[in-house]
Length: 201
Ligand code: ITT
Image 1 (cartoon, rainbow, N blue to C red):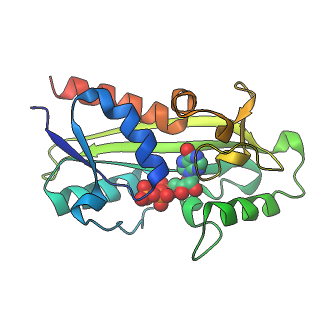
Image 2 (cartoon, protein in one colour):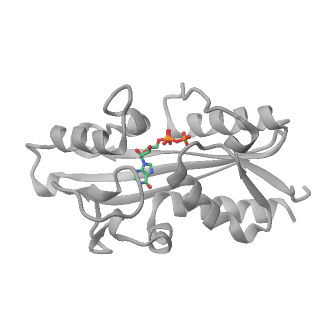
């Protein structure tokens, strides 16, 4: 299959856009956010990360007639039976912000002690074409702990309370390259980029 000149990135999240564009930069393909084509966010009706990633990518591909990449991701907290999971972006309800989501998470975990505050970020990244001729799917996970207070000013979402024991830092204390080297999104998109390279040969 021939390498496309342009791929639409099906996300409205600027934090993701920054991270994903960096990882895909060396593919030599122009990566254009869906907002530049006036594409609105698709409704995420899936029950899993993979379903939602495919819904978002298909929506952008059909609207633009271009191949599309999407990521569906979220935080899976063991003490909360996997919540907020696929609902991570809207955890604290209508009008949710990163700050209100973190406040809700810290409230829910108020009585959970240190060693039981384990969690993992999950990411499903996919590449689809408008005619659905080829779909590529890759996943990534990042294990850590939820702190009781915020630390660091980088990144987005739950990064200030997600502590990576191996790095000895929160995700918000890692620079963009360090985060991409360890994160769920970094792993999923790096794997997806490898699959794309093989696919386009
Ligand atoms: P798009 O659907 O437009 O891509 P979104 O923010 O709605 O943007 P998701 O539905 O995939 O994306 O929800 C992901 C949420 O999970 C995100 O809003 C954060 O709250 C959280 N999240 C995912 N990856 C994260 C990361 O690397 N750091 C911190 N929080 C993250």
